[in-house]
Every structure is written in C-alpha cells, then in structure tokens.
Length: 217
Image (tube, rainbow, N blue to C red; front, side, top):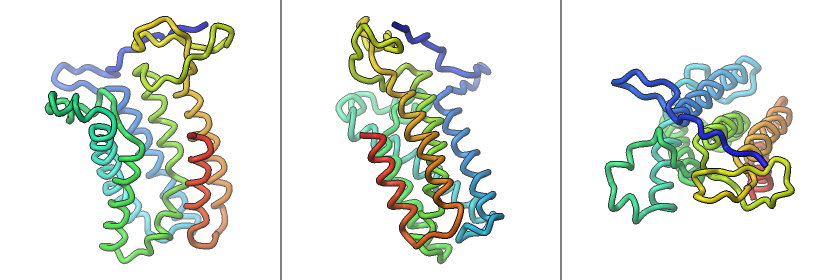
C-alpha cells in the first residue's frame, strides 16, 4: 500500500507571485500543442499556417481555461461557489472540468474558423491529435494536488494509494496516473500515428472521441 506524498501545490513562490503545479501543467500542455502543431504545418498536414497555429492557441487556451473552470463551478460545486464567489478565479488551486473545457474549445474553434475562413471539421481534425499530451499534463497536475482519486482498491492491490485529502485511510486506485497513461500517452500515440497521412474529413475527430470515451469511461 502506498501513501500519496502530499506535494506542495505551489511550484514556485516569489512572494508577490505563486505559481501552482496545476497551472504549470496547463502551460506545459499549451507549449506542447504549439510545438507539435507547428511540426504538423511543416509536414504539410495542417489546414492553417504556423502563425495561425499560434493564434489558435490563444483562442483554445481561453476556451479551455474559461470553459473548464465554469464547467467545474456549474457541474460540480455550484452551491459552494455561490457562497464563495471569489474562489471561482483561483484556477491555480485546481478544479477544472473536461466537459466544460471541451465545450469552451468547441466554441473557440468555431469562432476561430469563422474569422479565419477555415473549414471547421478540418480544423478539429488537425487539433485532436495535439490534445492528449495536454490531457496527460493535466492528470499529472491532478496527482500532484492529490485530487480526483479513484475508487477503493482493496488492501491487496500493490499500487493502491491512500490519499489523505480523502479523509480516510482507504487505499484507492490512483486514477490520475491511469488516465495519464491511457488518455494521455496511449491516445496521443494512436492519434499521432493515425494522422501521419491525410485522412477523410472527420475521421480523426471521430477516432479521438471514440478513443477518449473508451479509455475514460
């Protein structure tokens, strides 16, 4: 049986500025998106230019952060945040919803495609292979924060982990690490290999949705 080490959620404390691991993982995800997106442009596998990749990152980042946070507030803890509205902006302390972030990206992508006269389905076929590594980084942030643990694992599971924030000594599945491997590393590998050559419009997006649904649920 393992015990979560209860990492300090603050990666860097400058006094006037505190950088949380969770926020830092989001930055890692955005940087990977930018680098891999530019690579795909140079490989001739993108419907947009390198400059447009940079611009889309801004749209996507805003969609992820705003949508993810609002989704968390509305879907998971509406009563709590109604009583503590100032905490809605404390994104660095965790609390993001994938579903809210996904909806935020969908809306941001639609706006970007409309303003840049880019095919919306082709844009998302380009985007989805770049997403899994960002998901992987987010799951590492969840693990560092000691949140989003899994179900009770039983005392005989060698990697069962006690999460002190759960308020008990029950070993649980470290689901954040499972998802890091499955929806992050594995899904990225599948998507990246699948999109090494041009595919019919919509296939990459459909594969991502099916793959994410399979490993997530």
